Length: 449
Ligand SMILES: Cc1cc2nc3c(=O)[nH]c(=O)nc-3n(C[C@H](O)[C@H](O)[C@H](O)COP(=O)(O)OP(=O)(O)OC[C@H]3O[C@@H](n4cnc5c(N)ncnc54)[C@H](O)[C@@H]3O)c2cc1C
Image (cartoon, rainbow, N blue to C red):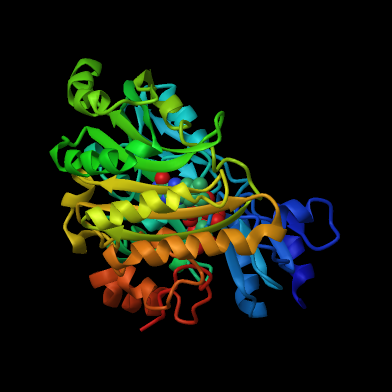
């Protein structure tokens, strides 16, 4: 790196290379299966550092990773031999409670964002776990507990500050550089380094939420009931289905994860049929602050560094055969930390016209996820085999495209274009305009037109 000295002079954050204290932490990401060794991690303090790092990467012809919360499933936030532009130290959040807007920097995690906004009884659609980064999640679309009522995270994005591949700074919104703003709302990290996001926030107070848990011998009936329940739900309600292992008894169970983003008494009525179904092992649904609800699914994914292998796609229908395949796979979980999830997307998130944002998957559907998690790398083959075998059984009922943030590195190459769907051509044109050399290519990549 011939210009490293020049970079050091203009860079106020930390430059971390192999052998430096903190390098081991800086190179690692949430998915322990990813074991890469970048030449340099540039942990930025602000926009000026980001601009220096982007210029440096271009001049040196380096492979570039962008890192916010480090939760990319394929591990795009690190690489071998290149540069990581790491925003994890950029934690500024400024809420304007009167205007109901919040601006947050690219290193903020959802739990940090929620902490500030919930102090004033406000929130925007974030993910379903609290420790993902706002950056990667927002740029892929953002599916979360509030999406039925308030749309995806990108539907709540008002403006963004971004440093493009030529190191220029742009502050974009629906009025300022609307094309670039459009591309950021679903185009992942393809268009530049987003240094801050401005969101619309909504009043969200105490809500009804939690899980109803059933033994696996009721799972086929529960899943069919759940499938038929989903289309009857109002925008305020959320219902997801998870196959997982009950931690105390160590046996597979199925759970409906329910929520109601509105008055508690209305929620009690809407969720009553789900809570009265079958003979649950436990009904854990109750009133709780929104921030508590945001952490309910943190286990079993909270631990950084566990080994993970993930498959995902959208399903427009949950056929009996598909449900039976999921039940069968859950009865043979290769690890008690693995799970299968049906994540229901409906309401406001699905009513935005497809061409309004880069996020094209505006259908009522389920995001289906099969995730293997394990501790011991020596067991990797067994757990990866379980995920692949489960996927082979379920895949015939699934769409070609997935939620773009859930596409795995070893998915078939046509899955990325299928997931960008009908917006791909416009995205490719804009990629050619803003990143013609594909500097930002460690992502679900959009090749420049
Ligand atoms: C446990 C778990 C739960 C999840 N739950 C949900 C969920 O409920 N809803 C949902 O929508 N998604 C969910 N996801 C997917 C999640 O949205 C993606 O993994 C997302 O990429 C994580 O963002 P990050 O900032 O933490 O990741 P990082 O690894 O830091 O970044 C991922 C990628 O995003 C891009 N990126 C990151 N920061 C920037 C930036 N500042 N500027 C430009 N590009 C950037 C880059 O391409 C980067 O490689 C989940 C993932 C995990 C692992």
